[in-house]
Length: 382
Image (cartoon, rainbow, N blue to C red; front, top):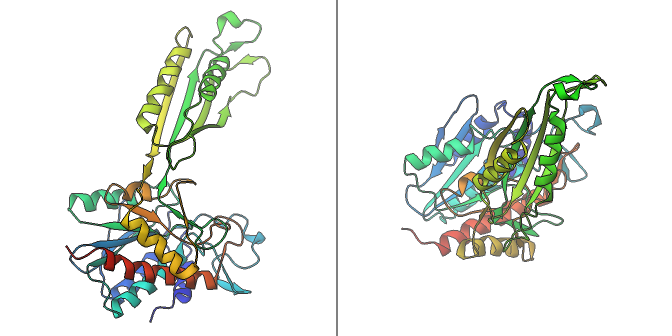
């Protein structure tokens, strides 16, 4: 039988710092193959991905997750080796313990229980990527596109991100704000500060543009979403001299936006503002937007009810249905089906001594077992 704790340890001991795989996907594939899942490795570029399915009919309940992890940071600051997967006072320490190798292990163990009990009346599937913590271009995004082309039907999806805020089971994510990164470059004419008429200083143009963008109130919020926010994340003027007007100035910003906006609309707004500020400037203003994902919401209904009831069955509390936080691969999966995110408390993810209480990992397995049981009771075979 699959032991979720032992499987989590095996996965942690594969040091799969994005984009490296380090054998982590082999462990997942071997585990699921042993349960009777038909496994397909889907490699895009250097990224290992896996789609595995048990059963051939709908509904198809999918679990999505990632085996890649962020770097350990200062390895000497860890109380235990980041990839040794040791238990200390009931807490499993290791990179990926929370985000999110434990969730993969918990759902695999829950799947084994459901299969043995004859509860899988449709199909179970796993969509596992090695590119969630990286640029996310060759992972879930490309797997989803490939599955869509093949007309692979995924009815609903659970993403195992660590969604609990303070106490296990206190929060489920049912949507996410969108994200757009924007690089702005203002190219002027370099010159001597004593002869400004011979130069074109790009810094004032950039500052005016940034202030104009920052001053706009994007919105007051959206049902189930907090207000959108624009944050300037970088300003760079590559000039080391005190008597030189620089020839270029650069900035970077990010907008987290709710469904009041689309990434394309925000990009057009910024491009328009840049054109206006640079209209009488003897230089060039270039805006390069990159939309990481659009805002989405899984509306309350039978699927969110199943997830919330599973938490209530095990943890004895009604989870908040939230859209807070950053982005996740749910932004890609929502193109195929309704999606919720349900996992451990995320306080230590990406930190030194990332750790998950062993008891909570077992609780998560129990929640997933209830979720699978309730799902196939609520959604009949098509």
